[in-house]
Length: 640
Image (tube, rainbow, N blue to C red; front, top):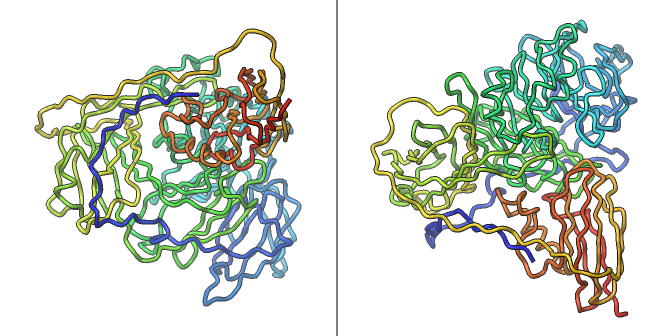
């Protein structure tokens, strides 16, 4: 059995009895767009054309044009294949009266020269070499205001991220005439790119080696954003950097601290806590709908493929540096969210795929539309940094008495290791006392005085005790602010208060027992989030030595539970929050028979345990968030 670490959160006041728990669907409705059965629309790229048609590029190398994608006035969409034969297209854009798509090895212009809505000219705009590694994904293009097309190149995977081909791990800029300029490197898996309303370029990163958790980063020419594999090409003509892989220390210090001595290293603008706001950050789109999508104009929406959901980001610039807060926004999509695009009516088209990448949405692919119902949700609109804490603004006025009570808030800070290992637990966790909560006269903001701010840390700001004037709780009561710079200015005049935290313990681990095992078993992994064995059999009460080999390119564990407890344990693992990683995503429960730790790619672990005394069907499952839906096997316990 395992024990979870003592919680550092304060006990918070309850919501008034009159409150009704809000639902995301009350404010943002998901509409499924039908797809013909003969079309495998594994969406890799998506863009609207000037005439209102939706163009979709698929991972199977096709481009489809969809008439009436919003199903206006009840009509059905119509699909027409525009192009085929591409190699895993993971981006699509309309530019210069043509469609441009990034496939594995090139940026391609697709042209319909005779007006029959089918591409008959495939033009190579720019090509790059390939090693042939399956992980060499290519994304884009993103069209910049000056007409340049930005492409991002994924690292290969050989047990760790590797740049085996020129410019892998880089972001590059390409003109319509095919002239290429390297922009920046340090990318591991840059699945999404986007621009703010004023044209600042951002990219989205996924957890892995050198990447403790997903994030978005502002990218400028000459930036190094974290993974050193791409630095092997800095001696090439045109490189804006001279840094080499040997210059990057592998100490496990937080990335922000390493950046103080490595000026080329650029910390993320906003971190997405792993397992909380998702597990595989994808697309970035700014709200440019002018209010048609609700009260979040110019904020960013960021997709997550593994958790099939979308987060919301409010940004600010402090001392010339981007930082800001990430909030939950909408979950429940049918497959893994990879691409988003605004339709002409102000709705958000969401393109999805899950093959080989896994997602909480069970469908292999899908196209859905997210529509604002017109109701204003009670949300934290923005979190902004102050010299002594934060100011939270709201979409609706708060109840002043509740919002002015410091016990309505909990603030914790944490960060991640910057190292060559795969991912990181949340480290250096600290609870911060809230000394004061000052409510604005209009009820639309609260300033929080918080003790001992630390630059470079992520702040979990929970506002569970805040409710609106009409007694409704927040739709989402927690935000995650990345504090790269503490702004200057006057602090609130408050008296610091002491705060007590619960004691923390260490999780118990299964202990070895002497003697030979009655059963020695081995389980490995397969692609598409599967174990390589579907069934294991052991004797009731027998001694078992089970070896788990994680030969995948993702983090996994193996947890044994009774069959009827599997879903509950998987859900509890997802809810472990900041401490999930360090607890190996194994919740405290008597239902857990045995478990491994959280294994990095290529790692192996043997656990020793006694089989249950009760014969029957048990399940071994990976409880890493998003994996449990498919990564299961049956452990049969039989009479001997």
